[in-house]
Image 1 (tube, helix red, strand yellow):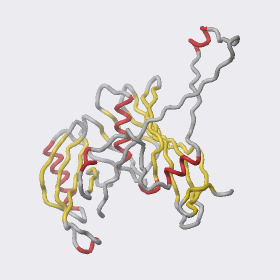
Image 2 (tube, one colour; image 1 turned 90 degrees about the vertical axis):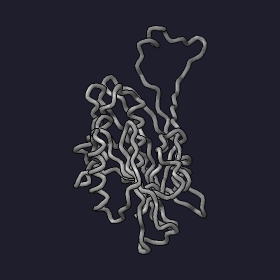
Image 3 (cartoon, helix red, strand yellow; image 1 turned 30 degrees about the horizontal axis):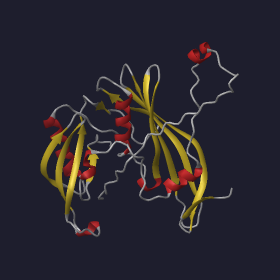
Image 4 (cartoon, helix red, strand yellow; image 1 turned 120 degrees about the horizontal axis):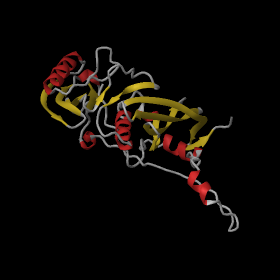
Length: 276
């Protein structure tokens, strides 16, 4: 099945709140220095969430990681070469091995293509093929389109043993050094583009980083909609999907936390909450 490119932008939103007293209510300096209480977090209002869920042109905020293929002018496919169980993406640091794996993957696919060339960056090898489609595929104006198959470099990330069907748990090991908040952010936002969430009903509301004593974390604040149909109430779940990388080992874990949910619908094209 041909996959249309879906890459938009994203904005990192950091919201803090603080309270203050009058002129005669001055906190002691020591209390200000030793306090470790984090400012309360402000989540988007239901109206803002609904507006983005039902906006067909919105996918992610403005400075989200943009894939290298975002500027490809035509419809294309992009995927990672996986193990035989399709559970995790393969990795190697050897270009020839990556070519062999991709060739085997290409021969097993329902739509195969002829080899055009290969490129690489610090994260993966990419093999380019021109894919040939038959009339049975559907209404196609072009019988061919480019396909980009990728094999991660183990020097960047090793995904062996990851269960891609699970939203919680082990997510691989980042081998790039030095580790930082930006490294886990780039990985999280890149991986988002290759998850099993259906793009039309999964929107990234916010993308932000934090640092713990032993780990760097990155959170994708998601709105996931279960669409029920015309004039029906849709279930909207607001979720934190948190990717954490251990500062010492590079091991990545992911946590999927549902924050709250509500029902909404489109009434004459206008988003509105449903009465409970």
